[in-house]
Length: 339
Image (cartoon, rainbow, N blue to C red; front, top):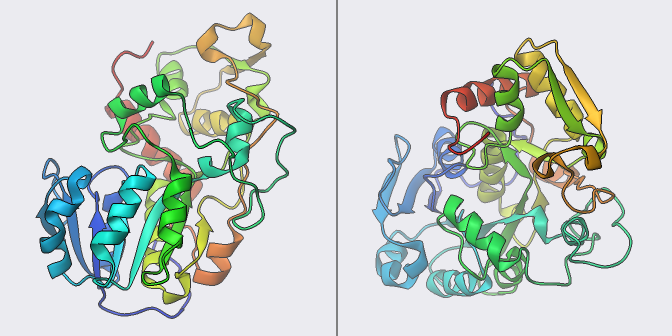
C-alpha cells in the first residue's frame, strides 16, 4: 500500500544525507525517500549494503568530524541522523553541517518524557497525565535515561549507543541553533522485521513451541505503550525530512491507537491460529522475567495528531499485515539465549 501523504510544502528532488541508515529503521527511511524521487546518500561503516538507488560514503559516526569534508561536499539539503546517542554527538553534528545544509532531522525517543522516568522509578511523584504531547508533557528531570549497567547491555544490541546516551541533550542541541534549523522525531516502541530487541519473540516462541497455556502478568496485561511498525516509522521520518514546515518542530510518531500488552499478545495469537489460553497471574506467582517491570501505573500513550495534521502522515501497512510480517521474521530469526 502506498504512503498517504497529503500535499505540503515539499521540495522535489532534494539531496538527503542519512547518517547510519543501514540498521533497523534507516533502510525504510532511505527507500521511502528514493520512492519519492529524492537523491539519497547513506553515511555508514560499510558492514551492510545500502538500499538500491542510494549512494554511500563510508566512515564512522563516532568520528564524524574526520569525514566532514566528504560529507559537506555533498551539499545536502537535509541531513537525517538515525543514530544520535548523546548531546556531545549532536553538538558535533551541528558544527559539521552549519552552513552546509538547510536542516537537520534528529531521531529521538519517547523516553525523553517524564513518564519514562516514572515507569523506571527514576522520577518521584504521581504518574504523568496522558496522552503525551510534544509541547505540553513534561520531560525527565534526570538526564540519565538508564543506569550504566543497562546501557552496557544495550550497547551489545545497538552498536551506535555511547556511554552518555540520552536524547534530551540531543533535542536541545538540534533545536537550539538559529543558523541551522532542526527537526526532532520522537519514536515509539518500534517493531517489525530485523527488530534488534525481538519484541514479539517471547510470545511467538511459546506459541510455536506448542504451549496450551501461557502465563501473563495480570498487572502488565493492561499496560499500554505506543508502538509503530518499522516501515511506517520510516515513512513518518521521511515526511518530516522533506517538508520545510517541519523546521523547528517536534513530532511524536506511532500508531494512532494504543493496544494493551494483552491485546498485542492476543493479536499475535490470532495470526498464528493459536487457541490456547493466556493465564493472567499475580506477579508474585510468576518468575522474575515474566513480572511487570517498574511502575506500570504510568503508561506511555503518545498523541500522534501533530504529524498527521501538519505533514499528512498516514500508516502504509495494516496492523494485521505488520504483525504477520513481524512474526514471519521472528520465526526465521530467533534470538540466541532465549528460553
